[in-house]
Length: 448
Ligand code: SF4
Image (cartoon, rainbow, N blue to C red; front, side, top):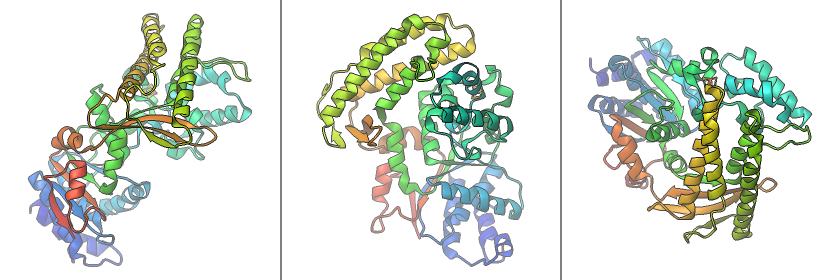
């Protein structure tokens, strides 16, 4: 039996699903969709499907995907937009299919790297940066995380309730550019790598669109830190959200908080507790602190000018190259050069890795800011935005007018199978708008 026939025999009346599913209803539209998905896997096709709610889309793509992945021994990535759909797949649909289908398969949910605690960073804060916490609440919160890290089974935020504040979690979460991987003394216990190990060899890999796109961007940067294993078969559910998420990931953003985080990571002045922190303090390179403070002053002036330029508006388009002087280029470049020197006297690999991460961040910040202030990329739109009232977040942004070219040429062209589906893809019965916006112009269509 081929994949198409096998899929139909499982879903059709009298098949294993009908025998096991309480309240089973014959759904010809579900079978029609499943048949088209099976065909896409067999032929190596790109397919867009609009199917209304109630059709049973998830079984219509999961069953052929599982049959294909186990037979071809190639993973299929399933990407969703919402947590509720991820939970439905992982907690309901996939366990049901595992009990029902006459074959063994593995399925994993992959979370973004920043969801996992990094034991090395946690240990570093516990041993030398504990004094950074300003309030008793922060100290207690950190102690709670420290205790939790000894008993948690997966080390991810989902297991740490209530979630800690961003300001603490960002000091101890796993980061791609600040990880020693197999050279790390905590590697054997590392939660992120344990989770990643389960992904290798899985038949079905469930992710969200953010992870899908950040994995794509990491692959493009080619620095060997992609989250997902190599794959060529992709199902995109809730595909109507893909364009906006791709736009955010492919674009650039410089915010006052990003600059502050970078500078605080290098040197954080003592607060009420009286303890300074940051890489320079840990390395005993305190004579270079004035360089960080100089950059901090420049950043304050720069974002102040930006705020005045924005006036009372929340968003304004940048239409003129050099609309603001780039006051950060020089001080951040000086820091980058300093870090290159300091790296030569790093005491161990862990310190060297951390400094390298800061060099990359300085470099990327300069690169992003230069591009935005010079309106440097053709086909991009540029704007400034203010969000939040009490702690205003000022951001300079650049995003492609369309993500279609990039997705088509750099991402989708590497996929043998793509199934993009949602209850709302077509406009007046036509997929042209959706296909044109995301670069799937040549995909076969099915509207049911
Ligand atoms: S291997 Fe990387 S993520 Fe894991 S504990 Fe070490 S530094 Fe952190």
